[in-house]
Length: 58
Image (tube, rainbow, N blue to C red; front, top):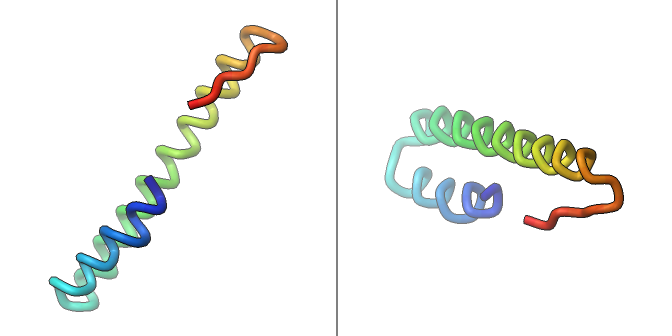
């Protein structure tokens, strides 16, 4: 998700919009993807912690 945000979405934003607006949108998008990534890892941690010795790969 972060790779898509950095290499695809940011490129499209900066090519189609003015720099200030694209910067604001990209800033919010990167924050959302970062928090989403943290939430997924926390969920994996909780699920793996509930079953010792069991690893979950997403």
